[in-house]
Length: 234
Image (cartoon, rainbow, N blue to C red):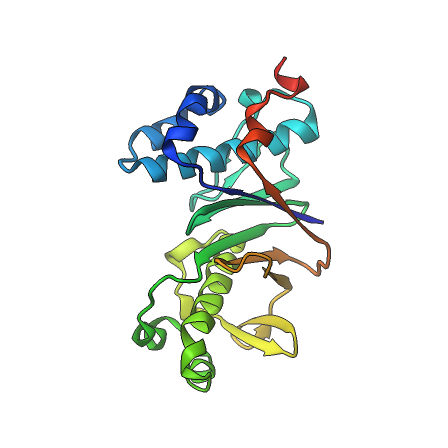
């Protein structure tokens, strides 16, 4: 089962009274990263991403959020060293922050705003030939949206594998089989499931999880859902 927690980025004025409370829940690495971030909106996104991650683990394992340890693999993908079978991945884009959680299987998530301006010329550089051709046959008014959908799949897949952008985006290929999205590397079908949430017209949200998975739950959260200390904080 994959759970996706999503929250809208709040206005900095509204967020300010709760910033210290959230900051105290974080680990040293997360705090340093936030302190080095210049833009206020980026600080809020980073902080909420880590807080959502810690809160979910805290609820599931009945520990204090500040006691949740987060470590990083060699290529930078974060994980829970104390709950190794509980996988997660964080993303933010447009006006939302989202975290995907999965038991036992690696997961990746990416989000892009639907109104993001794109340069379709870069498709030839980052997409495979068949993906570029697929894009070209789309009606002109649908090309930007199709590009962003493909892009989020590629990003989510690389985040799932833990490779990040160290691996070229055109080193694997996305194919559509009816309503099913499949990914191939060296013409070998990869054992993963791609899910795209279509409930938010302002964002493309794509999740990629290792294995065959058909149970995806999307939870829309609000600041009030996480600013009230749960029993584990008392």
